[in-house]
Length: 258
Image (tube, rainbow, N blue to C red):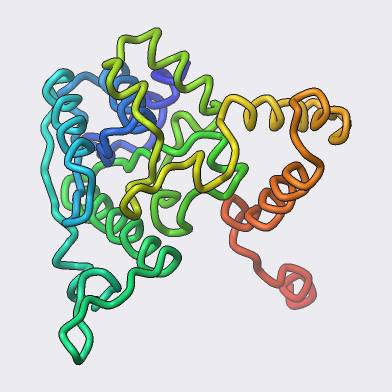
């Protein structure tokens, strides 16, 4: 069904190909497999976008996936872009010391440079940009607005992270990619679960219970989650809804004008 979805949008938009970032993680790898299944390897283009502080294993896994699938790919190092913006961790202060890396502004900048890179290649080659975010990440706001959330379609946006793992195993994604700790690759040692303070296994059960209308206190007790942790998660979901909603406009005033 997902491959049919990709094929449908490919045909509707009348593009020549699709492009996606190959981070070396399970989400982008799964989307690449599904895209090849939908369109064939000749119509899928991968972009690997490391920088000087990236985990070398991410690039290695990205290239492995591209070669296994037989798709064309480019490596585009975003380090010079970070340096040009004098981002922390990449540029020096007046005393010659590296500026302190800021997880929010500098980390988001990396993600936005990667989005710009994808759209540059998409515009140049009349391609559709495939996003690689999953439903768990979207709920938690675990993504950058106009960064990794910037795309034309989200083929796995309806799947929880645990479902992504199940599907990846089913279609033969390399085990090393499946078992690697999920990470946005935004700073050294960063992992999704460490940053969110909860495992995807528990988070997905909680999110599913929320979707079907289960009582939050009952769910927290069932999953052995503290009330404080439950409140933190619900607050984070509410605070990050703006990332997945249309850009607000003053519609009531527009109605008056019309």
